Amino acid sequence: MTMLIAFDGSEDARAAIAYAGARIRPEPAVVLTVWEPLLTQTAWPPTAEPMPLSGETWAEEREAERIAGEGARLALDAGLPDARPRAERGAGPVWATIVDVARELDATLIVTGSRGLSGVKSVLLGSVSDRVLHHADRPVLIVPHPSAG
Image (cartoon, rainbow, N blue to C red; front, top):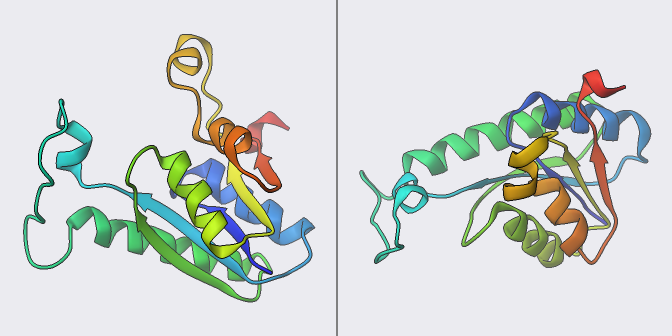
């Protein structure tokens, strides 16, 4: 049994880890940070696959690994005894990568914070947590921003 915690380093993601640690029966957890190369994010229309700027890894990948490691340490501190970091390169929308990794792990639960997008931005973009909720084939816990309580 594995819990998947989506973590981007934000205050909302931190609140989600704290909530899960305080209220969910401890089980192994994977703290996932999704990344994509900056060149892929800004290229339109999409072109051939860009290459890393230096060495074997992307700077974005190294940063995602650092963020995932921070999230795993927060999960351990919150009472989740077996939390492992994972940085995953996105091959599309972030929500799709989260759902795919949850399937791969056969996660019992997906935990995520909510960004609280409002107004036009929410209508146009939606939110990662909303998309995960509607596309996941397993339970999803969305923890609201700490000030929402």
